[in-house]
Structures are given as structure tokens and as C-alpha cells.
Image 1: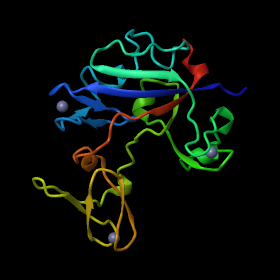
Image 2: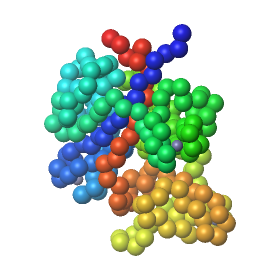
Image 3: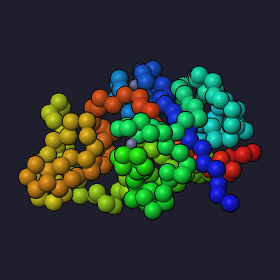
Image 4: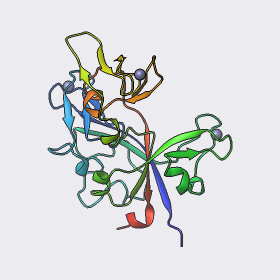
Length: 225
Ligand SMILES: [Zn+2]
Ligand SMILES: [Zn+2]
Ligand SMILES: [Zn+2]
């Protein structure tokens, strides 16, 4: 029998322990950065860690075990701002509302969620292990920022001085390229190679990214207490 897959639409942010500013958590990442003071917060320890981010203020209940509608701020911890509801994403082009039957495993393996109406491709990822460790029922992430495997992009060299633009060397031809914080993949203007910005660099550059909506797909059957 096929499992019943649920989808949660959410926005998540934590309050900066240094300046009280808002730190967006726009996906299942290990580190996040304060928009105001630039402090990088590791989500492994302390009160703001992945083990706690999805609890609804009750240690026996997490986001994926709750079947009812969620209240406005669903987190019971003051420094965590979580808004969540049961809702599937819509195609950005034709507004088709995705459902369970649109999840094609062969496509997901290629990180593609394909709209059956207009064939527009959306990025989808398998949930990282450190999330599944705490929330076993979580399967996939849509629209969320994900830490990419490091070994694939290791030859990116970084340097940053004062207010000068952050540059790194193209992994293919060695040309100096600038990072402005708007795009995570920088295409080399000389050789065309797409260079993926490492987590280490990405969290350290000033970025206009605000709190964004993302989606978590989970196995409802496993989520039942
Ligand atoms: Zn701050
Ligand atoms: Zn579509
Ligand atoms: Zn190049």
C-alpha cells in the first residue's frame, strides 16, 4: 500500500542572540546568518537547534505529528518564529497545485519536481540526514536552501577584505569572479563554468535574502504517534 504524503508550507526564523534581529532559516541548513549584525548561528546546539525548531512548544509533539491546523505562531519557544500550515506548493508558472501523484521518484533523484500541466521544473531535494535524525517522517524539501555536498565544489578559493567585493577563483579557468550575494551559482564570464558558492563563503557575504516560504514533504503514516 502506498504511503500518504503530507506537505507543510512554512516560514521559519530565529531571533539573533546578539542583536535581537531576525535570522531567516530558509531551508534545512546547518548555519544561518543574521540580516542585521551578520552573526553566523550554528543550528547544532543551544536553544535554537534543529531538534527544537519544529516542536510546537511541547516536547512530545512536532510539526509532522500534528494533523490539525496550526495556530499563527506555532512555536512555543519565543526565540523561534515558525508559521506552518498544511499546504502543497503551486506551480510558479501555471498555478497548478501539486499533489502526491506528481512526486516521481526518478525525477526527484535528479532534484526535479515537474509540473504535469506546463512542464515547468521546480527544485526538490531529499531531506538531509541531520533533519531526518530528529524528524524521521520528513522526506523532501521544496524551495528551501540546502547545504550541497562539499566534495563537489571544494576548489573554490575565497578572500574578502574590508568592503571590497568578495571574489573567488573559477574552478575551471582560475579567473577572478565576484560574489554579490544574490546568486549561489556564479557562472564564469570567461569559460562559462557554473561555480557553486561554498557554505563557508555563502554565510559570510552580505545577502539581501529575507524570510522565505519553503515546503517540507513528509510521510504522514510514519508521523502518526
Ligand atoms: Zn544579529
Ligand atoms: Zn505549471
Ligand atoms: Zn572560468
